[in-house]
Length: 314
Image (tube, rainbow, N blue to C red; front, side, top):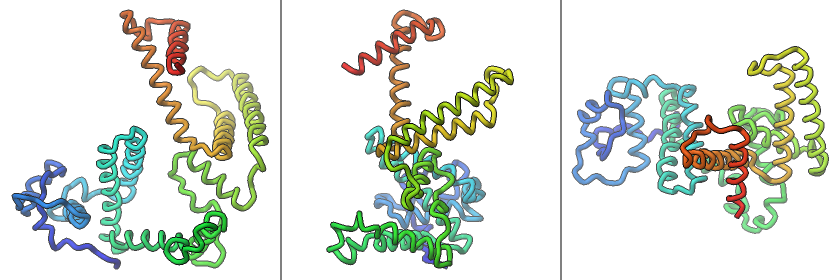
């Protein structure tokens, strides 16, 4: 098996502040985790030993011991989003904490893999360091390549070679094979479109993509009209056809974002924040008059929305 950072020093690890569950606290104390009166700063080695302890079959945390790659994966995604949220809020103190939470996810998965005899944290570090060095020959091998690297196609060639090596054959499969299914749908759409564009499957300019929006909207309207003829009840789930056409429209909108160099996830987050900001203005204005949104008419709230919008533009 790969490199293990070992568990031999677990009993010597000083723990300034334990975040373990209450059930684990007695075991932590019994193993002298709070032995030092003037604790040193923790290191990555300490974190690895903490995780090993939490997963210990005899003295570990019951919850941590029963977890698997599948049950931890949603937390990994959640922590990545919380990192992005701290960055969006420009909260560097929160970013420090969130990066730690995300690092814990890496340590957690690596520990479970080590227990299965597949790989250890050291192998994860070795693999990513080797990958970065391999993918940046203009930095680590030949500095003369720096000016032409981005337009030379070298990055794509190196990644294609890596993919072919992973697949165990000379020819790689589809160019879209390794775009993760678990990505946010808009992000995955951008990546799929970008992969296809690399081999020439792309609109030549923005104009035909914009025209495609009109085509998809027309198809969505047609599907909605057809559904209405079937006397669909208000609030009932949309038909498969309407859902499909709506998805097609979103996919085209993602393509527009790609052509414009826009991150659609970030753009939608900004739109969400704008909506929250303006709706709170509506609530505040109504509250000042002793009223709530449910007491106002749509026309009144629409007027307050316009006022909030105008105030933002001043």
